[in-house]
Amino acid sequence: MRVLSGIQPTGRFHWGNYFGAIRQYIDLQHGNESYYFIANLHALTTVRDKKQLEQNTLDAALDLLALGLQPETATLFVQSDVPEVSELCWILMTGTPMGLLEKCHAFKDKKERGLTADAGLFTYPVLMAADILIYDADIVPVGHDQIQHIEVCRDLAGSFNFHFKQEVFVLPKSKILETSAKVPGLDGEKMSKSYSNTIEIFEPVAAMRKKVMRIKTDLRPMEEPKDPAGDHLFDLYRLFATADEIAAMDALYRRGGFGYGDVKKALAEAAERYFAPARAKREELAADLPKVRDILADGARRARKKASETLRRAKDACGLG
Ligand code: TYM
Image (tube, rainbow, N blue to C red; front, side, top):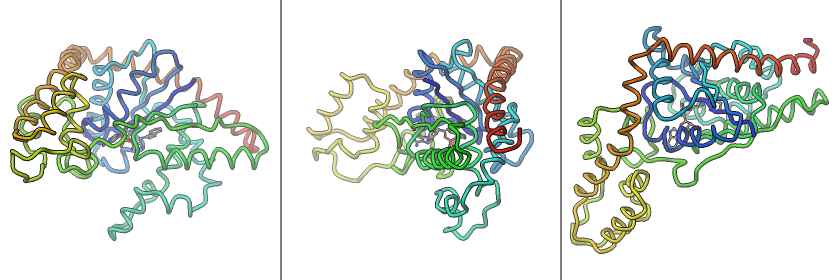
C-alpha cells in the first residue's frame, strides 16, 4: 500500500495531532511505501511571517522525527520542495466546481462568522487533493476533521479520470482511528489551535501539568459515582494509560468518592511518561540540525521523483504533454 499524509506547521503539534494522525504515520511506515510531508504551502494561508514559518517548519520536522518517523523507511519532506504539486493543483482546479468548495467546512465556518476568506483558504482542498493524488496514495491517515477533504479529493480524481477517459489517478481512502479521531481539548471541544484549547506534545513539563489542571470538568460532588463514557478527562487519560490503569480508573469513576484533581494528576504523570523518550530524542536531533536538513532534502528528492511521474501522466492525459 502507498500511504501519504500531511500536517501543517502552523504552530507546535498537540495531543490531537499525535493521537489522531502522527501515531498512525509511525505505525504505517512499516510494511508500506509511505510519504509524510510538512504542509507549509497550506500553512501560508495563516502564518504570514517568514521567520515564523521557517521556524515552524523546522520544528515540525524535529517533532516528527523525535516521535518516531524513520527517514530510511518513510519519505519525510517539505511540501514546497516539490513544486510539481502546485502545477497539479492548477490542473485540478480547472475542473473543480465552486459549489464543492463552498461546502467545505474551513471556508464555510469563516464565511458564517462574517469574515472574508481569501482564495487560498477557498481552494485549500484542491491543493490537498493534489498532495494526495500526486503520490498515488491508497491510504491517507488523518483525524476526523480531514475526512471531508479526502472525499473532495476522491470526487476530483474520479471526475478527472472519467472526463479524460483514463485511470490517471488512484482513488484514496482515509484512515482514521475510531478511538482518537477527535481528541478533546481543555474545554471538551475538539483540540485545535484555532480554539486555543491545546496541550502541545513537547510543552515544558511544568506548563503541561498546569494546563492539565485547567481541563474543564463538571461540578458534581466528589462522593457521587460518575459515568466514564463521554467524560473528556477520562478520554484523554485513556490515550496515555495502560490497560490496567484504565480498568482501575474506570472502577474509581463508577465507585465515586474521588476528586477530578486526582484524575488530572494521574493524566499529567501518564503523559509525561509517555512522551519522555521522544523528548530526549528531540534534544539529540536539535543538536544536529544539518542532519535534519539533509533528511528533508533527501525526502524531497525521493518525493519529486514520484510526483513528476504522476504529473507527467496527468499532463499527457489532458493535452499538456
Ligand atoms: P492539520 O495540520 O490541521 O492536522 C494534522 C493532522 O492532525 C489531525 N488532528 C486531529 N486528530 C484528532 N483529534 C484532534 N483534535 C485533531 N486535530 C488535528 C488532523 O485530522 C490531521 O490529520 N489539511 C491538513 C493538512 C494536509 C493534508 C494533506 C493531510 C495538507 N495536505 C494531504 C492529508 C493529506 C490539515 O490541515 O491538517
